[in-house]
Amino acid sequence: MKFVLDDRNQKILTLLKTDSRKSFTEMAKELSLSEGAVRKRIKQLIESKVIERFTIETSQLLHPVRSIVMVKLSPKAQSNKIIEFIRKMAGVNSAYTITGGYDVFVDVGASNTTELQEKIISIRNQKGVNNTLTMTILS
Image (cartoon, rainbow, N blue to C red; front, side):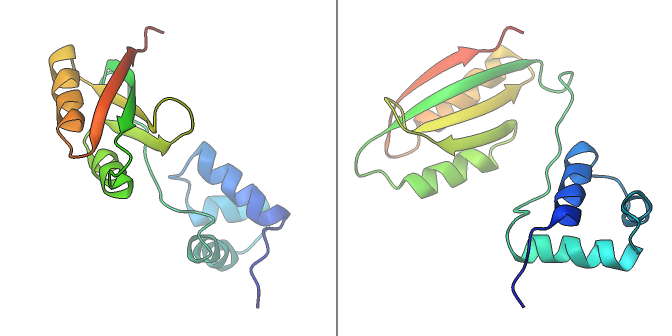
């Protein structure tokens, strides 16, 4: 049976995006479904890769210095390995391959500028990274 992203699945996704800690029981009440049905639908969303991972957003108090780091790779760089390394770094909120003058967009947080600089140096030290451009978010 093929998985279908119907209105109820869309509503489950909306509820999870709003509050990923919401229990299956709470979602079931809001959606007029059984708890088992919600659990099964979420399992299907995960198995079909509609939900790729569950993440958390941390308070700005944890990482008050936040920056965008643009990363330029060499043409023969193993981009998948570099991006995997970046995504696993503490404080990295997201990392995407992009088009344009740079190859990777990184949203990173740090407790201070020294920690941010250490993260940038760690990225720059990866084999295949040619250059970075860092923009600190002010507000």
